Image 1 (spheres, chains in turn red, blue):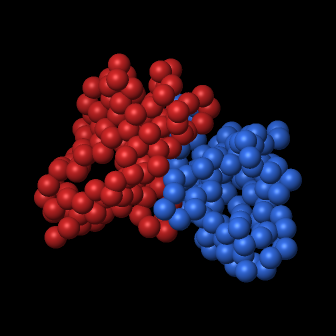
Image 2: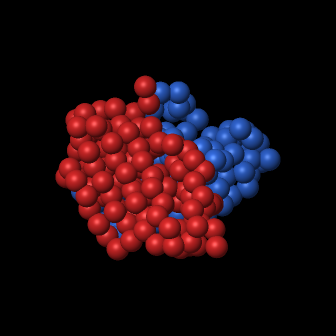
Length: 109
Length: 116
């Protein structure tokens, strides 16, 4: 079983719509969870992190953590063309971050 | 966020030569840095964890004699790809944490290595 499972997509949404991404993780002891965005040919940049069960909102982004289900998600509201990228979830397992495979999101005009 | 600078951003080298990639934390001290490799359309794969003043910890399947890591100071870690071959062509990315494990990692710009 992979440490972090993420649906690789691709996911295509119209401009202004909501994009929904999700991951599951295997280590129940994981304490911190992250969402990164990666544009083609660039390194990942942090969008959000979440430590507590529930929702965390930052602008158009909402991260959700459900420890009981070992599930994390990211909602992107009012999607913009510039949101087109690959989104990576990451989970702290021990001293390192384990990444999901990434979900490629395309926002179409 | 914290700034991690990686250099060079791209490099082309001949097969059999060695290439050194530098990773610097510019505005914080990084006790631990991480080196990743990413092939096209794949996720980041952790190669090794670099600890200041001690030997790096390599992930299973990563040849430590081929990928030499040095973390001589709290702000600099280097990755040297020795005797590079075309199959080593990839996107190499370093990252560093600001404080203890559990906090977010910040990434360098990445280095695109092409071995011809």
